[in-house]
Every structure is written in C-alpha cells, then in structure tokens.
Length: 217
Image (cartoon, rainbow, N blue to C red; front, side):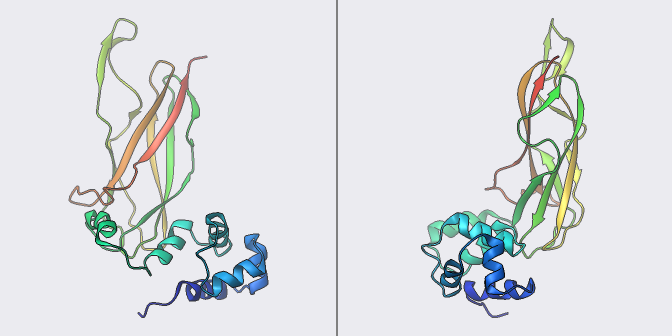
C-alpha cells in the first residue's frame, strides 16, 4: 500500500466521517483557516491541543493520529533504536480509559473491588494469546496490629489474566479484582502485557496502574 501524506490521511478520514471541511473544523472547535493550513501540509505551527481536537472530531484516538504523522518522517538511529526493543514490528497499544476506579479513587480498608482498563490495538499486529500480568513485588509482613502474615498494598485475585484476542483497530477491556489493605494508605499496582511466551510486548511503555486511596471510616 503506497504511503500517503499526512494531510491526505486527514482528508481520507474526513470523507469516512462524511463531513465537509467546515463541519470538521466546527466539530473540532478550530477555525477553517487552521484546518486548511493543516490540510495544506503546514502543521509545524499547529498546537498539540488543535491536533488532539481534530483527532477526536475524526473519531481517532490521539495516539493513533500522531503515530500516522510520525511514521511518515525519518528519524535518526538514536530515536528509532528505542522501538527496536519491541518484539513485534508495527505493534502499538493505546490506553483508552479507566472504565472503573480512575486514579486516586477512594476505597474502604479491606474492600474488594474490580478495576477495569480499556485498551486499543492501534498497530497492525493482532493480539493473540496475550496476557496482562502483575509486575509488583509480592511483600508479606507480620505485625502485632493485624495479626498473622498479610500482604502489603493491593492484593489481586490473580497475577495474570488472559486478554481477549484483539484485532487492529479494536478495543478490549481488562478486569482485575483487588482487595484493599486493612489500613489507610495510598496504594498502586502495576500491570503489563506479555505474549504467549511471557515476553513483554511493550518494554518501554509505562505500565497499567490501579491507584487508589484506602480509608477507614
């Protein structure tokens, strides 16, 4: 498939949404002049917020939008070397939403709750037989306050969850059941994706996080 200019990529998606130039600018909350500059290839002066608004107007995830822009540019070996760590070429992930319990949500001590992340496959590689695994260190302590040995921090019902097979362009929800510690604290649990061989799919990416504040009424 021949590579098209980024401005042509935008035009293609405008047509997919069956929008006019004016309607696209209005939906994105930008001026027609700003949109025409972008369509004419003059995006160097475009603000980041403008491009994000345009991505939303075209029903594209901003990371997917920027990936299309950056993959059309040549980078020095020092920049591209980071991406060579990925085991699969053209494999990209986007965090879409904290469906439940966004960062700093409040839970009660010893409460059991279900955290859900929504992810999107914005690459060209199907996610088949992949897992999301916990990368926290397991710490168990014994104190006179809480009696027998207990885990520090959040305790997950499982340290590995199978991911539904996800094709490029599709989204998938990941659900993990956690139990909060028996004491007030701010706690966080970290998770990353691995392939069927246990190899990290995105070693350079930040992990998924469940970050909550534990209170005792």
